[in-house]
Image 1 (cartoon, one colour):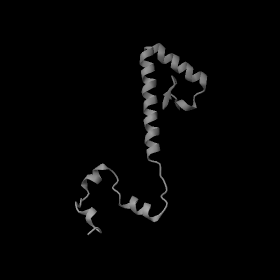
Image 2 (cartoon, rainbow, N blue to C red):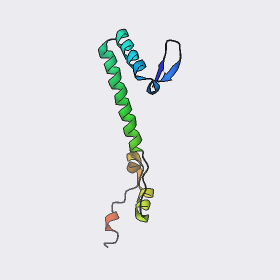
Image 3 (cartoon, helix red, strand yellow):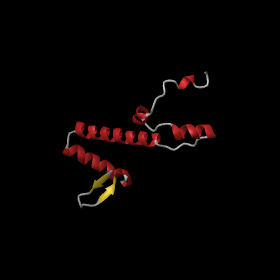
Image 4 (cartoon, helix red, strand yellow):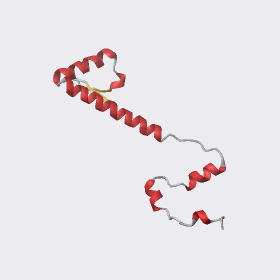
Length: 97
């Protein structure tokens, strides 16, 4: 998240010292209602949590064993792919002849 100073300098909020961040929050409250500032803080937190959850879901993992790797290679990537797979209604009869 970026913050633009009154001199026009842009800096990362995470790089602000505590005093500067506190003064920015106080200024935002003076210029807006406390409820609006609080709603923006909650919205930013919600967005951050969504990004963290999405990043965690995309983490790579290592498969152990040939069978696991084969399953992963042949498994459809998402529900849409799964819906487009050809379905053989007699698949369970194979080998039970």
